[in-house]
Length: 221
Image (tube, rainbow, N blue to C red):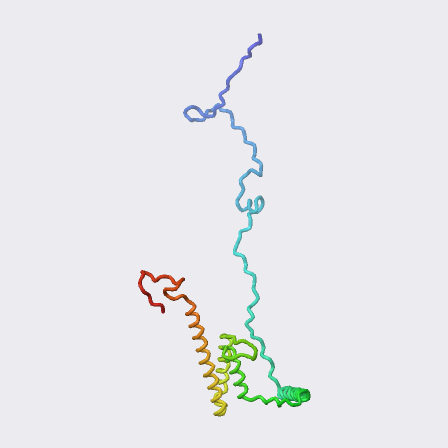
């Protein structure tokens, strides 16, 4: 049978039951220093050494855009008197050669009449009449071009405005008559088109015409 050795129980409590320090308590053992990496550090040193903070996102800089080009296109240089005279001379010489060739190829042909203000007005007037469908070229069906006719009428109005006070009585009368007739023809054509469109719509009592609300008669304006 093994021998039981005597053992001693040591009370290692530092304080009594009343909370007072015991005089025979063993001295406290010094604590081992904590590793430097585990010691608390100041916020500033931690940001500078250990854990760098992510860069804060500020307002993004808007790239500089090139300035808007507000400059207008330069006007063409004014023609000199020599340039104008040279162009006129070259044009006249070319026209003379063309007329000579045409007369040689067509001996019985009448000479081409020279251009005048009356012929300009008549040419624009006939263009507007053809665009309104009142007349057509030989062998062609009349076609209505309201937008083109409107521009032609406005062109005649511009001519009348810009030439006011610089025309003879006959020229002014021709201009005003052409403008009046074109405008009246434009009104007649547009009204005729409106009447045709209205006639294509179903009338009361015809198939496809919706019954009036409430079952009573209605006025169509």
